[in-house]
Image (cartoon, rainbow, N blue to C red):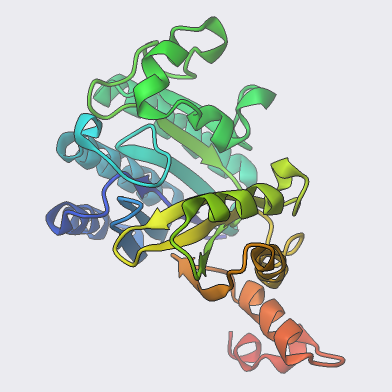
Length: 298
């Protein structure tokens, strides 16, 4: 059976078009890999790429992209709203068809070892590939960001899984992992007060006692002068998108603001969108398997 694996590398560059297009060119040049989507955000100063391919191709693409990023992205000059610790900040692998989580874990380890050996970038393994329970959560691994990584890596408990105990001077540190599909989903608010967005994010995210499978932070979109609750939905069935939207709406009322729009970054499983459509349309006795036309075409 053919194995298909998805890779969603995140790069700390969302403003220089020539670098973003350069990354896209690298991805398109790898045999056995398809570049499905890529998008950049100037406020976050971050770009997200979605690739799909066979195990060998996807591994080759991830390494080539990280090498290009290390050559062209200097974190000593980087500023942006999104937390980051590396030029290539994170590289997750996701099993799609014919592949298992074990396959993705093996690829994550191969890629991590190669980046440390050939590019001198320290690597942490996270999520399902993590070697320690304390490293499963990406937010915990990235805490301190690029500026705090030298001090962090000097601690025995934060010795990288691969590479030296010091960050690359300009490319920082990279997290490589294996996980199930994640949806990057943002909610925009009718205010420029980022403190309000941050307060709402604290209530909504699972670590604050909110939605179990939601991670979130408050940021400011400078080009639009609006605050945003920026989220990662790590299990869209356990915590559907509409539930996050409705909770944010309820919390926003206490500050006299409202939701003015939402934003999907990269790709999402169709069921995640259909689940929200089912909720808002108040469909009765809806059968996803039988009543979605595309399911029959596929």
